[in-house]
Length: 110
Image 1 (cartoon, one colour):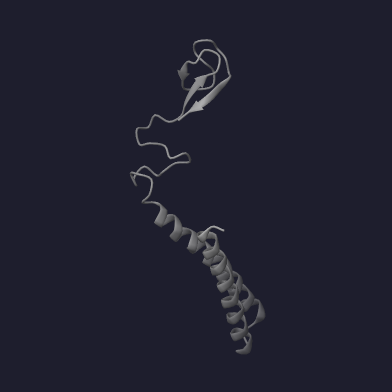
Image 2 (cartoon, rainbow, N blue to C red; image 1 turned 90 degrees about the horizontal axis):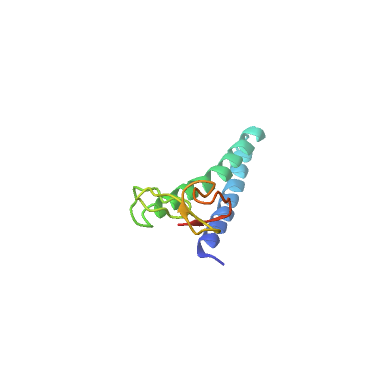
């Protein structure tokens, strides 16, 4: 199993236990049950979002230039984007149809 996934599950379990502890403490103090349930739900939902943000901030520095934003396929900073290769005439082009033969059969070339 992925170590990051193990860590995520561990934090979810810890946040669930922490949420139950908060609810038990608030109920023993006589706080309205709806308020304590709302606080527990907020803690249980906000903690994974905070973990995800921290993980994404740590990952921002990887993959070359940190100012490029990465991209789905790790696009380079040259801004060329995706080019397509026609499967009929092997012409490299941008867009939907091949300008040379008009075919829509193409593959992506990164």
